[in-house]
Length: 450
Image (cartoon, rainbow, N blue to C red; front, side):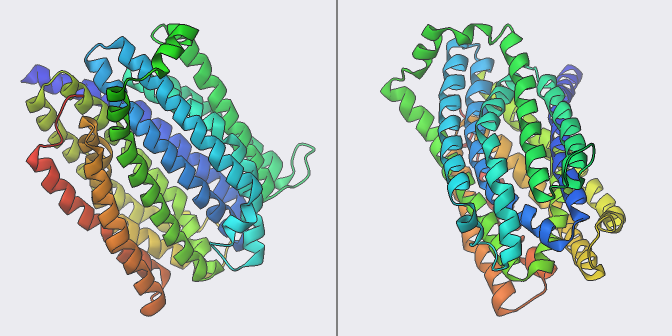
C-alpha cells in the first residue's frame, strides 16, 4: 500500500507540477497585459477583456481537440500502442489547424462586427477589434504547440512545455513594456502594442516547443511521410471512435464557451465600468484555476493510463484522492484571495468605485471556486479519461444553458442587481454541474478502455 501511495504522489507531482507552473506562467501572461493596460484607463481594460473573451472561444475549442488527443494518447501510452500514439497526434493536429484557420478568418475579416455583439460603447469596441485582429494571427501557431504539448505530457516530458511558457512570459513582459508605453525607441502603441507583444510571445513559445518535440526520440520518427499518411488513413471503426470522443467534447466546450461569452455580453451591457471591473478579475481567476489545473491534467493522464491497463479499481481509488487534493488546495487559495484581493485591485489606475466592484467580484469567486475546481477535475479530467465524453457534454449543457445563462439575464436585466451579485448568481450553475458529475462518477459507467 505504501508503494502505491508513493507511486501516486510521484505521478501526481511529475505531471501536475510542470502543468501547474505552466498554467501560472500563462496566467501571468494575461495579468501582465491587464496591469500594464490598466494604467491607460477603463476603456482600454474593457477593450482587451472583450477582445480576449472572443479569442477564448478559439482557445476553448482548441482545448476540446487537445482533450481528445490527451484521452487517446494517455490510453495508447498505457497500452504501449505506438501506432495509436502516432495516429492520434497527426489526426488531432490536422483538426486543430482547420479550427485555427476558421477562427483566424473571422477575426481578421470581421473584428468590429464581432465586438459589436459585446458592447455598445464605440471606443471600447474599436480597442477590442484592434486587439483581436492582431492576436488572432497567433492561432495556427497555438494549435501546433498545444497538440505537441499534450503528447509531451503524456510521455512524461511535461517539463519541456514549461520551459517554452517561461520563455514566452519573459518575452511578453519585455515587449509589453517597450510597445505599450513606447520605451527603447518605440512609439507608444497602447492596446495595439499589447496585441503585438502577445503575438510575438506565442510565436516564441511555439518555436521552443517545436524544438523540444522534434528532438525527442519518442516523436522523431513521426515526421516520415509514410507515418503521416498511415496515421491519417482511418478505418470506419477508427473514425467512429474518434468522432465519438471528439464530437461531444467539441460541442460541450463550444457551448460552454458560448455561454461564457453570453456572460460577457451581460457584463458589457451593464456599462463600461462594471465590464472593466470584471475584466480586472480575469487574471486572478485564471491564476487560481491555473494553480490547480495541474491536478485536472494529471487526473486525465493518470486515470487514462489505469483504464488503458484495465486497472479499474486503482482508477477509482486514485480519482477520489485527486478530488481530495483539489478540494483542499482550492479552499486554501480562496482564503488567500479574500486576504489579498484588495491589494490586487489597487494596482489598477481606475476609479475607486471600479476597484471596489472588482474586489466584490473576487469575493464571489472565492466562495464558488472550490466547487468550480471539483468540476474541473471531475469533468475535465476523470470522467473524460474513459472516452465517455458525452456525459460531460450533457452536464455542461445543463449547467450553462438551463441554469447559468437564464439566471444571468434575470439577475442583470429583470432584477437589475449589481455586477458582483449577477456574477455570483449565474455561477451557481457550478453547484448543479457538480451534483450531476458526482452521481455519474459513483455509477462508474465512465470507466472503460478504448
